[in-house]
Image (cartoon, rainbow, N blue to C red; front, side):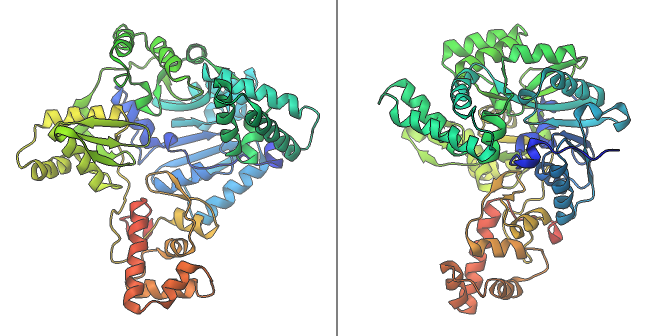
Length: 515
């Protein structure tokens, strides 16, 4: 077999990171709420098409040791890096193959979850066909496929600036020069657009977005040779041609409409009641100016139940969405904020529910645990059906999360604190760190990074403090210096503060040895 030919992704790697929307827990939870019977997250098979350097798939494999993971990528260098990363973390339930999407045949077996992030919009039509064909070919009867792509109508705005950048870079062949020229063009437009005009606002938004990009993102996304956007109706039609149907978005709250003005919500509700799911999704895209979709697909023959299902809440695990501030308002009302929304309520039960979930952060709780806590907070037995409704509405506006899987997160550091093997490997390599909530954090300070790297579950506090001092003994960092100058008792207090901060980021595990 001839050696694989290098691709542009070998020359300029596409930045890879974990994507929480692709976690089997997310896919299985949404599928469960919509009437499917997905495979147990703890014992499933997952295929990632275009796995890149393996960051996402290794993190999944590390979090679900009883499941099996397969990654495919066209770039030989990416596959080599993925295999090396899996070895460094010590996961054995993931395998990587270098090859084309068309290489995936029925001999690969069936998969409960298929992930295809960052492919559909950036490949020729024949490859898009092959991608959906593979999803249908290998997807288990109640399986779920995740496919992301650029979307209209927001894609029109993005494409306008993309065309400008392509005109600017057309005479350049060196990738770094192309990236530099693209950024320079947007800086020029952003600086010179008419002050206070809508165009200036758009230009500055695009400039901020592009400047936040790494070289790999800009090279392979905005100024790539292929980059198409699609209306949801186009995508859904293409999926049906391959025996697949639209299930939902990976962010379930994106499919909901209760937060809109009454007249708008009423129209969207009518479309939903009439079974016009794609038409409603298109209207939502028009309202949001959506640029990007993370769509879930299932087999066309599955019956999808789109009724609200608060009655399923007691079967699931519960967490707060990443909590923001909360503030007391008038007449007992309280405003709560998450990363995506704000809600104000004067309902004592709703207030108690949201406070209880935030107090438990970052751990998952059961419905019965929550009810027990509410009994104390409210001073009486809560109405369980009302609590279910509160949780369902909170989930639909991204104020709470529902899960079918409960990761072993420690909300407080134990006697022998432990982080996951994945997080310890990442911090030793100087990488961003994957939390047990499957998000990414950048630990910038040296002392926290040293503490995390040593959190392997083998040390009590005294031994831990001694090991940290030895690990950072040659550093001139100010916080490290404070730790080294501290008395033994002060060191323990400083260490405990760092451990509690790591626990609040969902970086400490309740499993012995860190898993």
